[in-house]
Length: 518
Image (cartoon, rainbow, N blue to C red; front, side, top):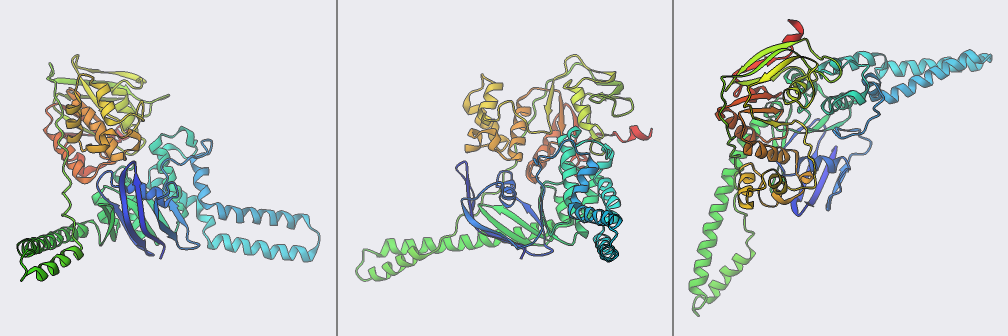
């Protein structure tokens, strides 16, 4: 047993996330942790990583096992280069290497023949240990993982302080994989990976000898790598054997079986209650009625079947535009201090839906931020039609004031909208009840994404620009967003690493990598 969790209980901001939940992780189990947005997936990862303390419960890792935890907010030494940081994954081997160097130095310093022989033997043992543990393959091991995750595209001599948030997470992930722990715990590892690097991670995890627990909404990814699905539902953690496809079949069967049990029990309850009601006053049947009432009182009543997760009801507002030609880009060079790419030129017509693809770090987000004029261009030009109206979905979840609630955020942007209308619009985007009143910082990544989608939906626009909008969304929300974008009559410029998502939306695909080989 690698990990045992028993009787876990946690209420967060008056919302019960776990109610006496238990599970375990066995050696070589490859587990996908799933659930709707806001059920507590990331919270569970934080509990296991020691960043949050539950109200109740026992969490016990097996003694002496090595646990690797992907902390996307981890603080790192910004002065370290990528190469030096990744070499830190082999810190115990570097310590042995330092011992070897110190031993060799002492051999040269001593004149005592017996001491020299002892030191020579020690150095030989240290060399054998380094070789057996793979010290001399460290450069190639680092190169393989860096290439597989696309990190070498940033240059290995780049200091960590110059990386974007997504790039830094990829480097942290690379170090974690290089450490080869007994149990890996990952939260949405594919969020910052493009399709090629997701494929590499799939192969790595298939070959991985240890166990892992991965939070992901990426169904295709889970289907490839897991042999157990754990779903958080109604405060419980339900375990299913097999991959994601197998989970879907098992869950459908479980739901049907539970619904039948519930209906059978309800019929029995109704029959008993009717008997008690009719017979408790008669002397001849009072004892039988009392017996049936005792049976009712002792009965462990099943809760009603869970209400199925409801889709989002997105309907992006369209403002008609005067020109068929919406955007012209001529010899545009983008970057922060220098051009990231060769000049690019393209034209976009009104109503087109453009998916921008390319490996992570190539400049997709930089292009979007240039088009919305958040950062200045380096060279060239671009021009939107005069009456363009843009609604933008940023990849990062940052807020001017993260203490404000979704209600307050919407009210500040649309001060004339009454509270009932604000509530209604937030509910259409999956933010209802107390969620609408909580500080935005307490909401999950998926819930914050839904608030941003609500803001987009309320913004009258003729161009929607979205940077990785599906990163934290559950499968039903992704499907709702996909259908809304397909239905939208205006122009869409979309960056997404999920091919199954953008293939159904895009009328054109612009692979930025083509600029590097043209």
